[in-house]
Length: 106
Image (tube, rainbow, N blue to C red):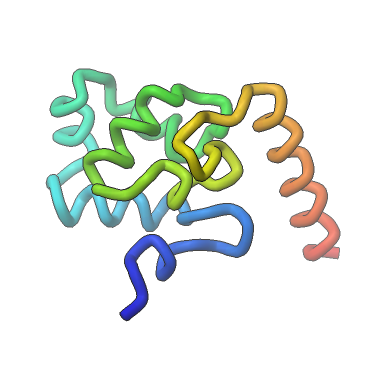
């Protein structure tokens, strides 16, 4: 049986943000409710899902809610041992992904 984290992964980038949202909604209701549980704003939750330079603390909390290691959801943001990747390295990863996406679109 394929684990959820393997089903949802995009090659090299982890789960698609919409898959993370869908899983959170299935388990906890709206993203607003998820945000309330975590003591953050709805906007903060949305930012974490789409912005790789957002809060590592909130990424860790969301992964914990989903019972999945952060690395399984965001391998470009986290090390397999649970250590977050530095902001400068994350920024370089984003630039590399954007370059590949442009090349594939051409």
